[in-house]
Image (cartoon, rainbow, N blue to C red; front, top):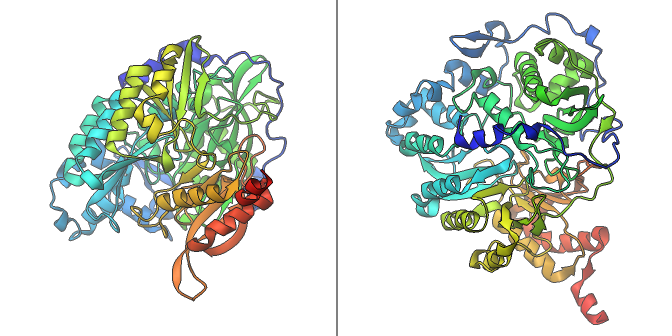
Amino acid sequence: MSSFSVKFLAPTSFLNPKTTTFNSKKLYATPQQTAVPAPSPVPATDISLERLEPRVEKKDGYYILKEKFRQGINPQEKVKIASEPMKLFMENGIEDLAKIPFEDIDKSKDTKDDVDVRLKWLGLFHRRKHQYGRFMMRLKLPNGVTTSAQTRYLASVIKEYGEQGCADVTTRQNWQIRGVTLPDVPAILKGLDEVGLTSLQSGMDNVRNPVGNPLAGIDPHEIVDTRVYTNLLSQFITANSRGNPEFTNLPRKWNVCVIGSHDLYEHPHINDLAYMPATKNGKFGFNLLVGGFFSPKRCAEAIPLDAWVPAEDVVPVCGAILEAYRDLGTRGNRQKTRMMWLIDELGVEGFRSEVVKRMPEQALERASSEDLVDPKWERRDYFGVHPQKQEGLSFVGVHIPVGRVQADDMDQLARLADEYGSGELRLTVEQNIIIPNIPNSKVEALLNEPLLKEKLLPEPPILMKGLVACTGNQFCGQAIIETKARALKVAEEVEKLVSVTYPVRMHWTGCPNTCGQVQVADIGFMGCMTRDKNGKVVEGADVYLGGRIGSDSHLGDIYKKAVPCEDLVPLVVDIMVEKFGAVLREREESEE
């Protein structure tokens, strides 16, 4: 167990929710509508026993797809059958792979599949198309909490790669570092372990970073401190960063979050499993939402499982749900293998009964009506200076433009966390960073630091506050368009033309995989190729409108398809005026 994890596991007080005076109201009175409507639920009694036979079996310590279920499986499943990906870590296969000259990798299908597919189980993504021979490395950072020492170590890694190296804050409160070369991987993995980090089980058919309240433990209005739960979940899923084959052969990726505040910073409606705080018979626990996901062919909001678990069952119920999905999920068309497709097939009750079978006591209570999330709560802005629940301390939220940072920025952030705070940083799903635990006497000096005055602003321009962008085609081979620089440019140009009184959240994603989560944005941009007014093929975007976050969350819809990127600024200006009450600056100036 890393020292970083122990820090949060020791205090038992984290298991007790903060006493709250808010009215207990049910957050979801009825199941939320999906962007593509789910089929009518199938009664559990209509599911054949044959269909409920587990499709995987354990052999030599790893789960593998049974022979009888291998008809029509997708290519990724075939790669897993050919060689167990976790052996690269658990049996030190990475040591041998890292010694093979990269020019020889593609000569063998096995080693080519290693670098392009299996290494994703170690959090390594080969950038074959745009950075051949280099990798993006995705970490596990439960709840987005990290230390100055960890931040410095990551900075030291990317600094070695010069212009090829950089880091991104992701939409799952996580770090991704870029430019990594294969021969360096064994040493980097060792270095991660020494500072209490891991990249294990962070890609492909694994559980992604557990998301929690970025203000956990410091928020005067929090319902419960989520850090203990997200840490326990991450440790359980990865066997404390040593590899856990129980959950490494899922049909697809799987997202989990624990809700800790009324603000729903964690976006529960887009997670495969969301823990919603609720009391039952005077005991604290969580109602469960399941099945939320995005994909190119379908986006679905999480729906109630009609289940409540006490706080001590957070881990067991996660294991039971994962086992049901692992055992019964289909493995054909990758666009139809996320967990919601299984829920559709079995029906909510059918799926729930399979979860119950896998609970330690084979029992699962029905949902509680005593939700602790206030549905009328106005989501708070965490930028700038805010008082903590700890007297005399404040936190400062700083803007990371579209989540991209360089090594020097990371070193400076680590220094600021040490000099002014407690050596801790918090990452958010909007790709920003919070510096907590700052004595009020030091706040002014922190705000006068050059980094916060010139680059990472505590009070960014209003249209920058909600700006999110995926990697884009600068590095990602699947992205159709460039996103990060374009997102910044469009926001800057629009803000020159209109005046708005509140942040309008704009999200950019380079392709239909929607890593930038455009469906939850006020205005979303999904990359595509289109033709301009002269018939020339150019980069463009499908524009989405109407995504909502918070207690009245719902997904946005297509507003206009295939808009050339060069035409986006005037279109967004029109949208701002028509939909968001913006005023053209030239009119505003003439009225003055």
